[in-house]
Length: 502
Image (cartoon, one colour):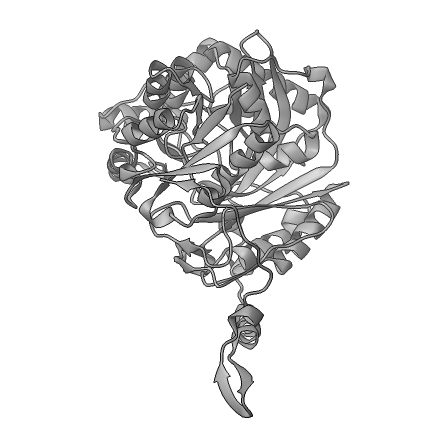
C-alpha cells in the first residue's frame, strides 16, 4: 500500500480523497493555488504545497508543478480526482515515467476512451450498440449534411474530446447545421484545444443511465449497478439517483453486462463509468466512458456499501478486487443533489463571494460531501460546486422526503446557490413519479423556476445572522460601551496542531 499520496485537485473531491486515504493509513499532500491557501482541502491534508496562481492552467493544470510537488514531498502516487488532469492520458503517462503511480487506468485505454470518435469505433467493432451517426470526425460540412440527411433531424454535434456539455449543439434543420458545426469547433478548440467534432442522431427525451464499473490487473471486471443522471442543465448533471426507475432486473442485467464488455474491449482497469442513453422503447446506446471517479459516485456507495475511493486506491496499489459480481446487491435508494454556487433564475450564472454562514443538514440517511466552511471564499476561477448532498432511504419515496428536508436545512449565505431550485425539482410530481428525462428542466421551466419565497427566506436568515453577530453591550467601571466580545462570539474553538504548508 502507498505511504503518501498527492491529490492533484481541490474542493470537495480533494477532501473526499483525503478522508479515504486516512482510513487506509496513507499520508496526504494537498496542492493549492494562491486563492485556495485557506481552502478546506489544504487544512485537512498532512502537507500542502503552493503550485501557482489562481488560473487553473497556472496551478491545477500545471503538470510540471504537480509532479515536482509529488517528488519533493516523497509521494508514491498521485490521485487526480475528477476534472482538471484526471482524464489527460499525457499527464497519466508523465506521472508513470517519473516513477510515480497514477491512481487510475493505464494511459492507452484512457487515450482511447477519451476520444469519443475512437471509442465509438471500438464499440462498434465490439458489437456494443451506439447511437447512429458518423463513424469518424470531419471538418467538411458536406460530410455533416450527408449524414444528417441519412439519419434524419434532429442531430447532435459533439466534440470528440469534450465533456461537461461543452462543444455540443442540437440541430433541428439543415439551415442551422453549418453555423452549429462552426460553433462546436470554436468551443472545442477553446475548452479542449481540439477541432475534432462529429455528428450523431439526437435521441429526444432519453434517460441518461450510467453503470459504475471496476476492473483490476488480474482479469477481474464487474459493475456496481446503475445511476440515473437525467436531471441536467446545459448537458451537465445536477441530480443523480440509484437505482433507476426505468430499469427492471432483466434490463439492468443486460446493460450491466454490456458495460463490462465495454471496458474489456478497451482494456480498461481501475474504477470508471460507462454511460448510455435509454430511449422510450428501452433501447440503449453507448455514450462514453468516464475514466475517473464520478462526481455522483456517493449514490453507488450508499446502495452498495462499497467505498469507491478506497477501491480505486487498492486497485492502483496492485490489489485484487475483494468481491465478485454475485456478492453485490443494491439496498434501498439514494439520491444526490449537487449544490452549486449559481443563480438558477439567471440561467445558472455562477456566483462568487465569501460564505458568511453555513449550516449543514443532518439526520438519518443524510451525507454531506463538502469542500467549504464559514469564511470560505468562492472563486470565479473554478467549477462552482460547493458540496454534494446525498440521502439514502429504504425506498425512493423515503430518499426523496429526506432530500427535500435536508435541502431545507442546508443554509449557505454569502453566495447564491442552487438549493431552492433543487427543492422545486424534487417536489415536482413528474420527478416523484419517476418521469425523469434529460429534457426535464426545459419541459418544466414554469414550475421549476418559481421563486416565491426565496427573498423572504433570505431576509429571515440575514436577520438571524445579524442578531448573532451584532455588537454587545459590555460594562466597564459602570459605563456601558457598544463593542464586540470575540470570546463570546467566536463559538467553540480549540488549538489546532500546526502542520507544514509550503
